[in-house]
Length: 169
Image (cartoon, rainbow, N blue to C red; front, side):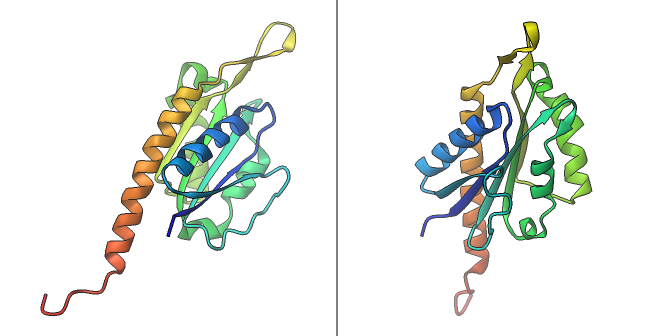
């Protein structure tokens, strides 16, 4: 039976949405049954039946989008294998700084322990206030491939832990 995975995202400039689509495609290619949900359209999808939840959101004017923060507050995430990504202009130059500034406080505040979390480059203000696209689809694909491997290991470990001991062992 394939792992059931929800990829939920909120995007204003389109970067987090593009990344979510890449993550969903990669996980699907690894045998996951994936549902891709835009939190703008379905703010509170039912998490029942999902083994894994991937949450993607963005940052604007120094704040993680409210719908992304609200989704991460959900208590039902505690029983799921979780991964989180965000797109940020700061991550264009320094993903570690973006992760520390935006993700780490959310992880502490909501007591989350994701298998993976990372900041990916987003869009930045350019000349005349127009957004410059600094997204990196290859980096997102690599992140999703690593996530697929970690989810497979976690699923195997969980299945092994659920196996009854052999008689005489």
